[in-house]
Image (cartoon, rainbow, N blue to C red; front, side, top):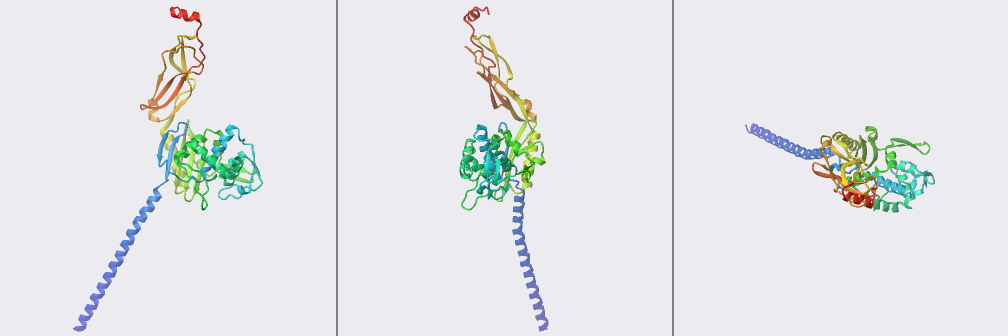
Length: 401
């Protein structure tokens, strides 16, 4: 009997130990599972974040249509080359540089890494050839060669880039390189923001040469021995609409793009920064372009030279009355449903004494959308109206003219 009791005791003890071990294993699995869930949720959150910052603006007026963290300072990577282009094109515009200028490649330029067109020391290219290489192939070597030619050194050219950024009111921008490569140890990184890049893009689209270069998908270089391929894949995804500007990437910066497109007179600029993949970046930019092209239209409010149908008295003029004209054209991006909601208010004096010069401001047109002033246009004289002679003035006072 005692033997049976002992076996019963042993059986109960084993059952207790097994149950306790199972409970510990279950608890451990539950703890591990609980630890995994937040990580999975975190990964899912990171996956869902398409970018760190973005902005959509209308290119002519600068009207912001959408923005997210637009003032966030972020590395532009190769989009820094857009500022190089801005400096160069402003100098070309002033006549300080010419696109046919010859540039001899230095040893330093030939040693640039990353994206390049494999320049060799002593090779000679025109400024335009190297600008295409910089903006189409994103050549770091070509950017460096241009900077040296223009300013004497890359360091001096960086100073010009920062001066240009200041003149454009790019308050969140500081450049430390001419190409946007990640900084080496001891160097500072380039920083800008979506809002600042939109300002830069608006100034760049004023240069036809720039859009001519950034709209190139592929082009030969070095007498056809090298084919440059544009990194901006939106040129192929939205052909005949997208015509610029530039992508940028390195690990910390993520995938960036400043893109512009025009359709039916509406010019859009989209900047996306810090996307986790190139596909995400391009899809987001394409989505925003399509969204605002479908929702907005460019309303032509007035054309330069349009006659303003309101007379101004000229008591001293050779003519008794005058009608002014619009001194400039004005168009504004409006939601398609509100195209007819734009109102024009004409502010003109009843009369103007003395002579009237051609082009003289007579008054102004105030343009409103939903009671908000969105623009003003000067109303000017289309002709010179000299003062009337003494006899004519006397006849008018007598009411005989």
